[in-house]
Length: 321
Ligand code: GDP
Image 1: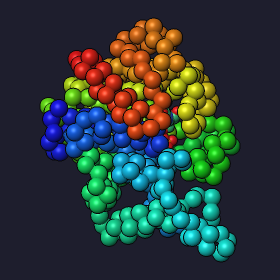
Image 2: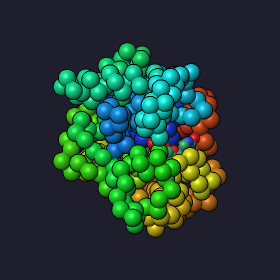
Image 3: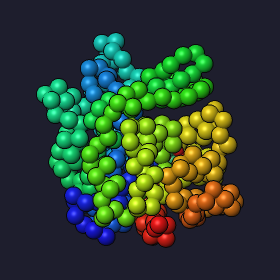
Image 4: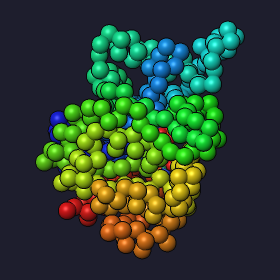
């Protein structure tokens, strides 16, 4: 694999918790400086006057070994003095911000206000946190996921955190995506001769991957990319490991199955990694014209993340066009 930081050999598209698990595995299975991770910013929002980027932060915390291993988001060994003080003052506490995490949001916000781009800020944070891979937001321009429900629109974090995904969803849209300029690192990587694989991490297809695909020119660039695009199923045993992926599939009229996810990405996908527990779906997925790999995709520790990443990288070679 090419080890030049400027020309990544593997490009991973990721949301937060599920995606970051595989991204960490990839850093163990290949030279980490040759990995470019494009993170979803549809979940970003302004809260308490701060710019919060949940998926980018989950990636940064996970890849720097600082993530809370239980929750999968936020920092390990976090303290909560700010939250407690805020609560005492009657402030909004539905979105949990640990003290260390708060520092990330404060520093990011003041740098954005000083005119730096999110890409530069995240790159600098990654360097300071000792992350060898490059993490970039899909765009420096705002992309905001809006959740459409029969009772009206909800801002993403109101749906996801405040309402714990209870609303029935009739659709999602990505405000700003049409006009957003994709990260130049992302588009350059897609065209780079050094690129050997594009990996769609096991993330929520609607809430984590779609906002990336919705940014102007991204879907077309994936369709014409010379390297194989492969996805890892975010379903294990026909259900989500965590979060609303299964509920979203059902509510949007898709079967809750690995096949439905593969079909959803079909226009740019070459290969699909399906969990061992879902191997009955292999013939259906092959009928979509995809190459299929069956693997244990449940990532419970560093070794299982690295093991899946090695399978994904080997599989990508099998999928080469
Ligand atoms: P979020 O932005 O924090 O919701 O995280 P993602 O969208 O990146 O990931 C959510 C998805 O990851 C859900 O569909 C989960 O089923 C999936 N997921 C979480 N852990 C695992 C795992 O160990 N293996 C697989 N295959 N999927 C996982």
